[in-house]
Image (cartoon, rainbow, N blue to C red; front, side):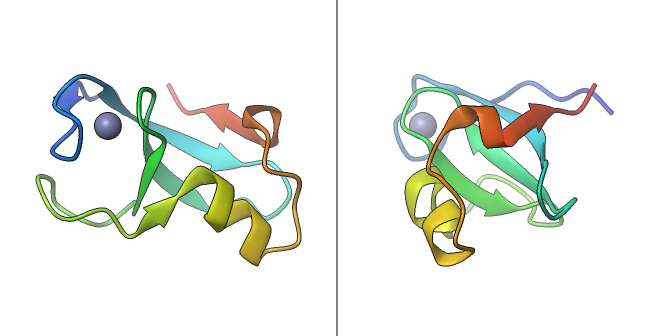
Length: 71
Ligand SMILES: [Zn+2]
């Protein structure tokens, strides 16, 4: 799956699908403002959360290394 959607929150970043290494969850992330959407949300839509908050809520370190891009 490959998508290139402009971020509706910052209008600068590109939305990419990532897999959370620890949980296998799939999320959509803006590489610029770090907004996060559930994988099944049709964009544009208001962001659900941010990378930092998303990982923190799961007890994970808020680092991009916790995420791996899904091609
Ligand atoms: Zn953004």
